Image (cartoon, rainbow, N blue to C red; front, side):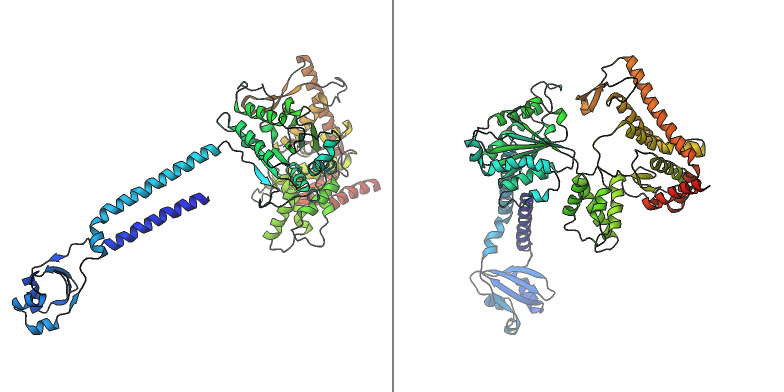
Length: 614
């Protein structure tokens, strides 16, 4: 950008110079009218001459009508003598304004050469500019193989340092990388006792869990330069460029002494070799081979450590994960409720919050959110408060931002008809009532028929505690809740709509996983079916290879259908038994469009108590 601005300024200056010279020399190139000396004398006699400028033998005459003419006098005689000889009286000469100018000057000798000098100078500058750009292009061609890593942690890098205090949660991960920090600070302590610090540290976690942030914190805590590059930056159309960039990156890091090389999205270049169509000579595999060679080239006392991050460890080449390369794998889990509260405190440091804000409640309502999701939530709340012309963010903006991050913005233009609104209300009421009636289902926090994203309505259910595994009974209740909307439509209207398509898809996926992956089928027993494999052709992602017979496939389909049927019967039984409560919830939804947890629990409990009283 700076070079472009400089070149543009250079061209503008050239144009200004040409315009100035043209303005200076445009008038001298005009040829004035030539008259004889006798005609000049006749005009003096008729009093039509205003001024005469004598420059040698040349007479520049200005007439009273502001026109200009030129004449020449005799070289041997003076102007006065010549005019007197032509009949001009002494009185007419005395009234004439005669001025004398020096003959020649800059314009006199420069004007004849202007048309030659200016084009020559213009073309000379033009070709100089072109050769200068060509030299810059050659330099860029040599820089093409240079690594494009960004430097953090060095003086003058302009990047704000990140410490472990800025990384909320991840207690176990920070303990694991603490030894890397200690080694970079005191390498002799480990070398004297014969210990070898890991050459590479692989950070594995879902997107947004803080892998890059943790790596930067390690560099800041250790006080060493931090070279950051993405795996995709090494891949180019030309074979050999990626490996050259890898060599340049590691050479630069080694020159810095103690340093950290961070490669984000390692799976972009570290996928299994031999699975593609390019043999061993394609660009990606050459880049991977060069990384393996560079990591093997570290001496025992080398103080350069490679940290890489990925969310696809299953596709990495086994040579990367062997001891001596990435021999330390650190798992970064999604934050629990306590970690989410700490993360919200960090991201809300620069955001003015009202006194009523309870970040713990927001943390409880956001299970499964990563650190990036929580940062986005706080930012959306701040944007919403600014749109409402508020000076601080309240609890309402934070709660509303949860729905926006989960489901998308509110679709106010998506207006439902009266019949569609009623169908949606009973659909969501079926979900909510089924969830409140099952033992293993998560409690309902909010029910709404306001369209958000692709959903016509939604039922927000949140667990009361963090769970890392699920039982068969919990899966069965979850499927029953998903089919609650389907069952409510069929029970009330006698037919079903397209609104249950996503619910059916999720329920079918859960049932199929219960049979094929979790061994929860009584008929098929504790056996897994199908092998996951990566489809390299056209980057189609992960696929499945069938390792079972067609007869077993038929049994799997029967078991999946059985799980779905039992879940649907469970949901239908609950809704038939509590039909008045279902209709009351749907009626309130049609009127208010949104029911919060407290009001929903009152509706459910009041109906149950009234039924017991009768």
